[in-house]
Image (cartoon, rainbow, N blue to C red; front, side, top):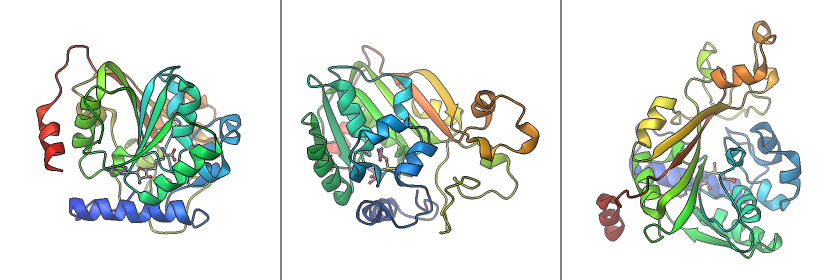
Length: 285
Ligand SMILES: C[S@@+](CC[C@H](N)C(=O)[O-])C[C@H]1O[C@@H](n2cnc3c(N)ncnc32)[C@H](O)[C@@H]1O
């Protein structure tokens, strides 16, 4: 969630890293987006799931939605959690895949990865491996994972298409991808003068909010055109954000129209080739 307009790719990368280092090392600070346990609950994580995790993982959570509602992670899976942060999603995935599975937590922010390693030890999650790297050049072999999870990371990538290309390369044919991004046409879009992605939320921060990329379902579908897109759901709308006039309408309906995040579920088609461009980029990196 950094200023993307008018910045070079390297500047975006550095700004993201700097910001998330602060979320890792100083989680009680107020950011222009919600963090920690309240943020988890606000974006839809079940309380029981959160309370089973080390508090030091949850305190630096900064995601935009609950990815596991789609139910695509199962026992024995090799999962790649891109933008793992301090480990909230990585550790949930680790419990879903069990001892036979493996979860790679990829992040470019050293402070977050250090925290993830500590949290995996606390949670006794021996099936977790923290990997440092950029999602645009994933340090894993072709076709090496069953599921890729991109929760709260694509919207701040300097080149989201490069990230998706890399996801396509590392997924095995038939492998699944789950992406959670801020929705463009959310309740904030309709609210006159709305700026920050979280404006109107009970967790609104007092700090300035630079622009971020928000996705329409159409744009997300286009980004994942090399995949078989199964579903794009719009989710996440708290009752207190709904204008009084609309409160008689069931919240689930409004969520589909005005929800704040999009959750994409897609598959890598069987028989699809590994894109060559990303391999060249990896060699150059
Ligand atoms: C919003 S947090 C994701 C929340 C996380 N899923 C959780 O469970 O707390 C975004 C994370 O993605 C990382 N990140 C952002 N851009 C990245 C990139 N291009 N490559 C790798 N990691 C990236 C940041 O360092 C940060 O830790």
